Image 1 (cartoon, helix red, strand yellow):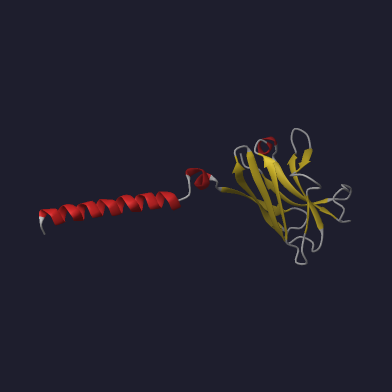
Image 2: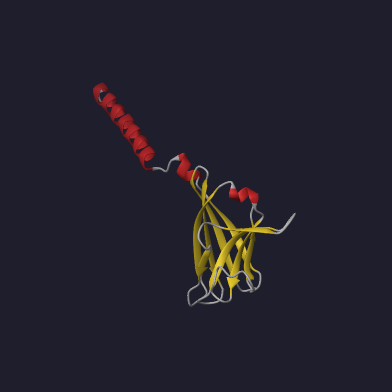
Length: 154
């Protein structure tokens, strides 16, 4: 191999390495995307021991979180609402998201609810609860039963 061919081979090699590095930077997720991990809070059956689920907490943008509740083992074709709850120092609760904070289960007792909340909301509360409404009216808070509970991690 002549000196000229060796130089050309070295230049070609470094060009390939440089191109590959730029290509990888273009297709790899940004640091913000990679750090947007999903936090999972397990929900355990409270009134119905067979019920279970998860709350998935995802960063949407600075200062905003997406809360998704995925539940199973609930009463089929029924109405549930989703709540932030504090038990101490006093009992307090607030619906998660907007509207009536409700979802309906399918004929297998599976349901899903998604809402967007300020990130600061998670700092104020101790747990998530999913409440069952026997009359299928999410506005009626009489005779509700807590179907699922999960502690908010801090």
